[in-house]
Image 1 (cartoon, rainbow, N blue to C red):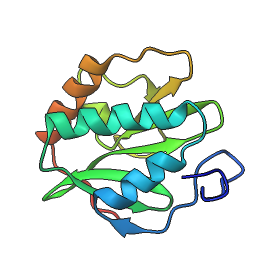
Image 2: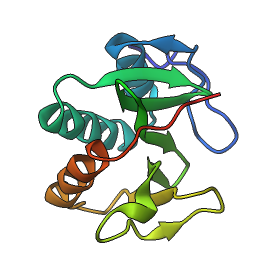
Image 3: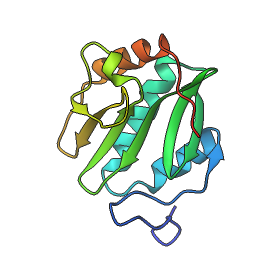
Length: 138
């Protein structure tokens, strides 16, 4: 994908991607993530698939979501200075992901360009999330 083929970015740096279901649309989102963020998106996606090969994927509201039969457990979003991983039941995870949300049990983890993020911790949070009820998107 050349720079002229890449989707435009929102003011916060997130790619505009059409709503869709499946791996293809999530891979389009990851490819459109600017700079170093695309490699982070690839690592997050790979860890999710390794832990849960039957994962459901969808892009909605310019955000990739990862789920199972009963709903969604994880999302990611691209900002100018970091990639945010959203754990939809993060307040129920041990240890809790570091950043609080004003929305229910949601917690966030911010990955910055110079971070060598803990893949084992991400995998553990995914495994824990799979044991919890999934979230419905409205």
